[in-house]
Image (cartoon, rainbow, N blue to C red; front, side, top):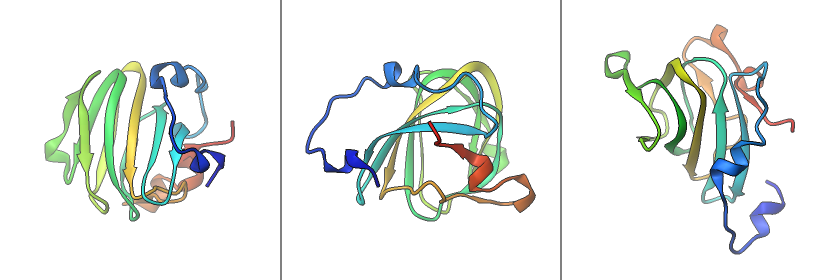
Length: 140
């Protein structure tokens, strides 16, 4: 965890923070942590391509769409539906989910993870689809 875990309070402008994300990435996503505490983390992340079915073992996730449009499914592919700015998606830990299609870019989310989601917490249903290294770019 980083220095931001020591803050007792803060104000954030997620849309402004998102402008610091790169225009492109070799990974599926790139993120910036806003808060990073054992009980919860919050991040702004950008999707650069579709994300295959996967799940997280450590946390429940709340995704608020700041910009862009695409399709997302949770639990199974039959729930695939379009999302756009102002939508919020929720799923518990171990729930398989995917972001198959980006329709309008940039696709940027504000996410709250409870408890904290560590960078390596991603399990792809088909291991050939990716790993923590191909999932998220945090080297900024």
